[in-house]
Structures are given as structure tokens and as C-alpha cells.
Amino acid sequence: MQITQKHILVVGGSKRIGLELTRRFLKEGSFVSCLYRTLSPELESLKQQYSENLICIPFDLSSLISLSQAANQVSAWKPSIDALIMVASSFYRTPLSEVTESQWDELFDTNVKGHFFLIQQLLPTLAPQSGVITLVDMFAVKPLRGYSAYTSAKGAFLTLTRNLAKELAPKTRVNSISPGAVLLPEDFSPEESAHHATRNLLGRLGSPEDIVNATLFLLENDYVTGLNLHVDGGASLL
Ligand SMILES: NC(=O)c1ccc[n+]([C@@H]2O[C@H](COP(=O)([O-])OP(=O)(O)OC[C@H]3O[C@@H](n4cnc5c(N)ncnc54)[C@H](OP(=O)(O)O)[C@@H]3O)[C@@H](O)[C@H]2O)c1
Image (cartoon, rainbow, N blue to C red; front, side, top):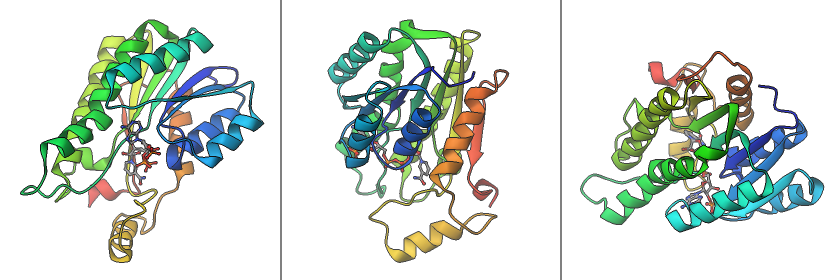
């Protein structure tokens, strides 16, 4: 698929990796529906710059009503979707002896359940030869001590992605990207940041552009489906 003039829905496109995806799609001449929870100044400024090509819609992955309203707003703007990029997520430490049910629910809502029901809502709008890409995590298959709720949710998201590749073929291709350390959480300590930044075969952090390039690769290669593409500097081999 060539993305120029195509309608792409970015689920969680207001900041960090999602914002870079939104920016690149607009630069390539796509029409972008951008779902956000918090409207960033950068997204507001893209809205002014690309007023014809960008629509921004608030949503909350923890609320099925909100997902349904967002899906309706997307299809009211453009009735069919060529590509759906599932980015939004929450990520935090949940030590096994302390994790609460509400933390478990939030991590599952934002990393798999909300995405599942949003895709369900959008099924009738997926165009022939469309593509779905989910942002998973290398820790979905290489568990991370202290993060069992998050990694379990991402593991489920990876399985969901592979399942959808079967269910939606041949009309829609479905792939995932599993990043390693690309943009570290803003609340990481300097020690944690240094540890994660260098714990891979290349000895450095990735960049949002690496994820954007992987996304374009998966959208443009019409014979790739069911793939989980690691963009992690080889960290999953350690
Ligand atoms: N960054 C990395 O190095 C890295 C590594 C491995 C995997 N990944 C995966 O790659 C993707 C993008 O990473 P990132 O670091 O750019 O993501 P992020 O900053 O952690 O989160 C992306 C967005 O998710 C939104 N979000 C959280 N809870 C939500 C909810 N209930 N409803 C709607 N939106 C919600 C956030 O909204 P707010 O703006 O309101 O907070 C945020 O804008 C994620 O799926 C992440 O798991 C990233």
C-alpha cells in the first residue's frame, strides 16, 4: 500500500512515538484521524498546519462508550480506513506483591482490551487491502521482572494481533512491531535509563523514527501479514 492520499487512523497519536507517526503520515500526504487522550501542543499545531488532512478526536481506552463514539466520529469524517495503527498504552511497574486489581484492569484496558473493542467497532470500515499495525513490546515475549501485569497484557496483545491476521485475511493484513528501548518513560531514574539504553546488541537507544520506518515497511509490503517485527537493537537476543 502506498500511503499518499490514504486514510490512516492513529490510536494514540498525540505525543512521543504516536506523534511522530502522525507527523510522518501527514508529511507523506495521508489523511489522518488521530485519537488522543491528552491534546499536546504539538498535535494542536499540526491541526492548524494540516487542517484539511487531520482530524483529532478525544478517546479513552478504558471506556467502551468512548471508543464507540470515537469510531463513529472517524467514520463520519471518512467512511473507510486504509490503515489502523494501535499505539496508545500505559506502562508502569507492578511488583507482584503490591499490584492492585485497578492497576491490572488499567494495564489490560489500555494494552489489549480497549484496542480489541475499538477494532471490533471499526471492522465494517476497513477498506480492501487495508493494514492494521499494533505496537507491542519486546517484553511481551521476554518477561520483565516487576512488570508482570504490563507484560501479560502485551503478551495478550501480540496473540490478538496474530489471531486477527488469520481472521481478517485476505482483506486486511495485520502485523505488530515490538520496540525495545526507544523513548524511555519520563519518570525513569538516571540509573534505570542508563541500564535500559545500553542493554541491547547495539549499545544505544532506538529512536521514534526507527518505529516510523518499521511502520511504513509493514504498510508498504503487501505480502507481509502475521509478522511481529522486533525493532529493539537486538535486545531480545540477550
Ligand atoms: N517508548 C518505548 O521505548 C517503547 C518500548 C516498548 C514498547 N513501546 C510501545 O510503543 C507504543 C508507543 O510508546 P510511547 O512510549 O510513545 O507511548 P506512551 O507515551 O507511553 O503512551 C502513548 C499514549 O497512550 C495514551 N494513553 C494511555 N492511557 C490511555 C487511555 N486510557 N486512553 C487513551 N489513551 C491512553 C497516552 O495518553 P496521554 O497523553 O493522555 O498520557 C499517550 O499519549 C506503546 O504501545 C508502547 O507500549 C514503546
